Length: 248
Image (cartoon, rainbow, N blue to C red; front, side, top):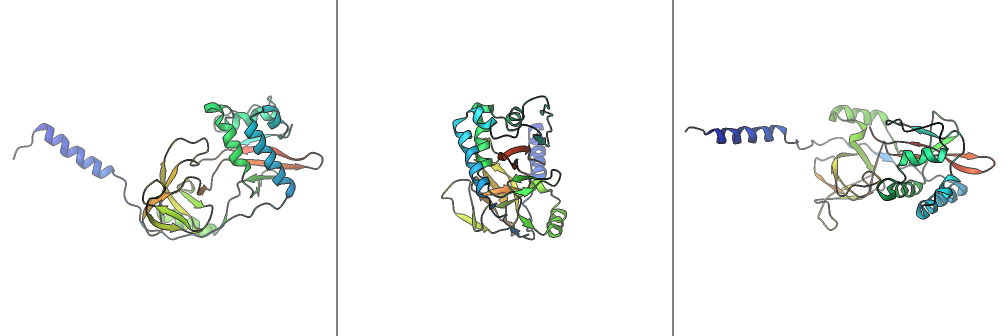
């Protein structure tokens, strides 16, 4: 049987699609995590509420009063947006894109202010950042990355144990499994764009047994999220000290 030119192209296209189609993830070893505990400081809790209130009113002056006047830093500033000549609050506004997309940065600030677990920033004495990463066996996690040919950005962890994984990115879809306090492989996100990455999107994940499904928006955390950093001044109390951009 002779192949027409159109048929030949169709066959080649089918082969190319088959070769480039993503492979189903293989099962992997589960690596447990221990969630970070909330920071037990009443003053810090009150300060975070003040940030949330400023984010709600969207009054720049209210936010400016919560940022340390000198020494504000912006780590992982890939776009080189930091300007040491600007006031600290202006650099914070630039870092989180305060007025982008009709003020989506304010929403991002409100979300970051809800994070109550902090960890020290080793490169800056006295500074703590939130959200804090969970505890885990770093050697076992490194082995997991090596065996799956992945990096930290390809993995997430649940905010709470017993997190349902559904067959489709919609509430009410049947469950395909349950995610415990362990790392889970990220395959992507589905849903509307979000001012906080993944916040309003369903996470497409692969469970340790190889099954795939979707975790609800906001139920998972990254090891490399955007982080708001704080410092406690002996005179004025807590202040926003800096910002660490997320990503790979």
